[in-house]
Length: 201
Figure (cartoon, rainbow, N blue to C red):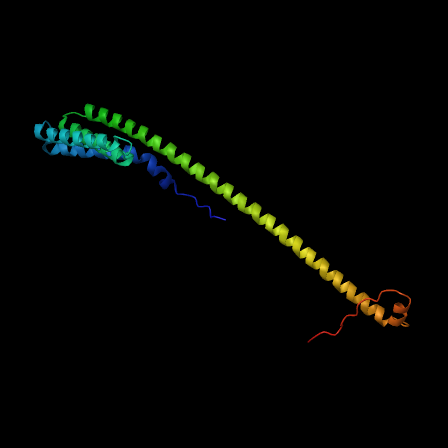
């Protein structure tokens, strides 16, 4: 039987908090960048626009066609969104627009993560169901084999008991007073086969 392990509440909560932690980290880094000279810097803003556009383009190419890789595409689009959020947080002079973009980015991140969580949950449930069915099937086979082995043992015991009773009857008959095998043969009665009662030690 497989051991049942209880996961710590931090291990269960960490995946749920990951999108908010990621977007909050980008926002904080953007505001630190803002305080260190990125505010109203056209060059820095242009750089972030180019990087965000490049990441989005890479995601579009990665997701195109039948052989598109969804993991690479998702990573590229997430990077594009993070770069855009960091660029706005670094360029803007107030907190209203960065906070608005942070809220939008967090909502989008949770929307994408929820889809992945549903898929992962379905796969986990299907795996657990398959494992349970396989375990029940193996348990049924074991029960059938145990019953079959028990029946064979009982048959063997019955045969041994019959052989022992027959041997005891033959020995008892041979020790009866007045027992004469020749008389049995003379009257036409079949003679029971004699057995060797000596045992090897």
